[in-house]
Image (cartoon, rainbow, N blue to C red; front, side):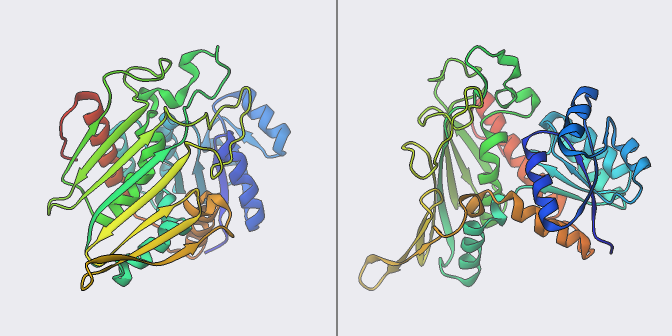
Amino acid sequence: MPAPVIALVGTGRVARGFLRDIKAFGHTVSGFVSGSAERVAAFTAETCLPGYTSLSALVAAHPATTVALIINANHQHHAATLEALSLGLHVLCEKPMAPTLPQCEEMVRAAAASRGSLQINFEYIHSKMPRRLTELLRAGFFGELLSASCVDSRGHWWSDAPGADPASQVRLRRDLGGGIVFHCGIHQLDMLRSWFGDFARVQAFRSRRNSLPFYPPDVPDHVNVQLETADGRHASLEIFHNRAPCWYRRHPPVAVDWAATPGHEFRLSLMGTEASCLADFYGTKLHLFRYDHGQKDTVLERTEDFSADAQNELHHDMSGFLRRYLENIAADRGPLVPAADALATMRLAFAVEHSIAHGGPVAP
């Protein structure tokens, strides 16, 4: 198959990052799409790429295009993906798939009917430290996996100046595919699913009111999610937005050193019948513990040090994921993960959101 020729659908921060990556990989970008004529003009001036207000117009002008990267706003993923698949393109769509489950299901059906394919960008499980954990699980280091605990603390999501219009804070609008799960915890849910299989029951716990009054009432700033498999294994996911300094502020800009800023934390523990671990993603260490059943003790087997790797490569390796995806497409191997698997993660995320909204346990 010829080398992929790529269209960008979206002109935000992710588009700029992917554009740098694609050039570094030596691939061709045919153009980009934005719904705003003003943004088309601005992005063309910035990048010297031809811009269009629809993907159909781009493909008509550049028929060699084979891949569409859907990296626009969450609530626009559905329509853009359907258009790209109707044109027979291979599609890499940013997470989450769409703000509603029926839209996600329609995207998967459209992929099955298209000569193209659909890949959702759940890159955490494909990043370096999760890949290492998957290797250890498959090699039997942990024995039977019984439980897991994950903690993610990253600061609040008010990204603009304090007086900005609340409606402009898309990450805090669940109706547009925002909220604490879709923008944050969905990656961890995808990782846990990959290791445990599907969960039979989930329940989210939150306080009756937020610590941060600028968060909408339907978006918790702290949530604890409990997940249970049909055979009684369990996992927990706790997400803090109300503990650490802001991570996302653009106006005025704030730069955060993840590893050095107190309150910022991404830790994952896996516990099996033979061993356990503590993966400290920001601390760049994977501590592996072995159970000495004869001595009734737990011993530190070893610590694997990832400090030589770039921080993003450990868990948020979007560049590496894009490179491997484009290699797959060029080799005619299709997506890295079937779209149906991403749909299962979305079902789990919607179940968690339902439990947040209504309380009580939910079956995904």
